[in-house]
Length: 38
View 1 (cartoon, rainbow, N blue to C red):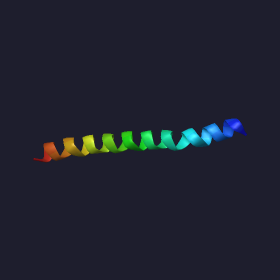
View 2 (cartoon, rainbow, N blue to C red):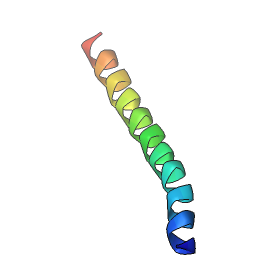
View 3 (cartoon, rainbow, N blue to C red):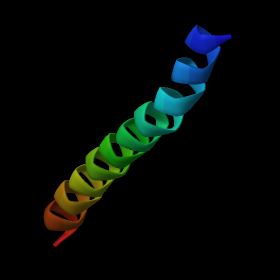
View 4 (tube, one colour):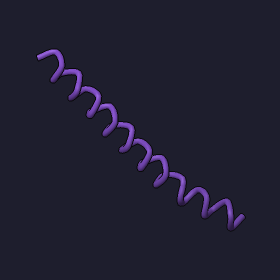
C-alpha cells in the first residue's frame, strides 16, 4: 500500500515532466519548419 501511494504521488510529476518535454520538442520542430518555409 505504501509503495502504491508513493507511485501515485510521483506519477503525476513524471507525466507532467514528459508532457513539458513533448511540448518543447514540438515547438522546436514547429519553429524550424516555420523558418524553413520563410
